[in-house]
Length: 318
Image (cartoon, rainbow, N blue to C red; front, side, top):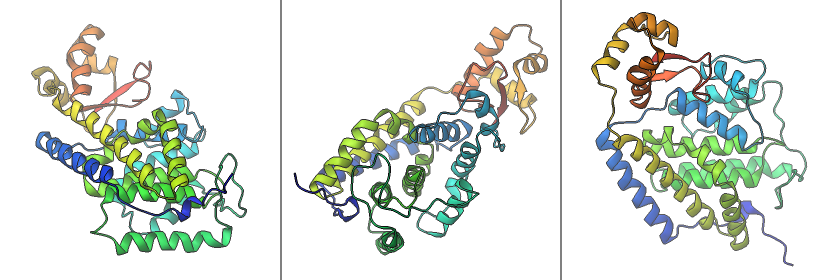
């Protein structure tokens, strides 16, 4: 049995499949822009946080997600609180600037960054670089990104960063959190619509496929199979946004507009409070004619979007 090549030594190449996928994504994003711009909101931040942590084997209880969704510091889930805030900040960061990594580290590991010192990482089957090589490899990765800026497509660059950060394994834990975050940050520079892509959820669903593509890239010493897999995943996410946008939005119905005009900016309302505000006696009518169309039209948001049926659920206008 031949010794597997180190993933961080794999060549970066662009196949015809990758080019076709990039063209297809560009076309679909063009269609998406003709409808309206999708802006990441509480639902997107919550889904990304929950899914990226699930990929690390961390499950967050719905009771804790309520505070996290509101951007609060939840003592029982500090990592989730940190990731939620980082996702909210994503559209404002520059992924090409390596200084952001220090900010990411401070948020995720406030008590000290667990830099990897040995060449062993639990459940990672491929050879990884010794500690002394981590810094030069990261420096080279960012040098490559900035040298090729404007020449290398942000979609493929994001996929490459994801592959390389997993290959380098700079930390003794949670390398995937940074890898997935930068992947999304890079593709978001191509189109703001991609910041609300349900990418982390798709990665959770397609976890085995991604692992197989990674293994194939290592076997061929070429990142192309992995990048091809990730581009297909991005395109699937864009298809999800397109399906969402083509649905006729009921947000402009007179009843929803009436509710929005009565609601205060930034305030969450319970179902009981909304009934009182609107002079309604039935919660069924509130759900059917006001809340459901407001949520579908993305003009209303929940305090706990991860658990829509939460008995303490509250709503506010966007």
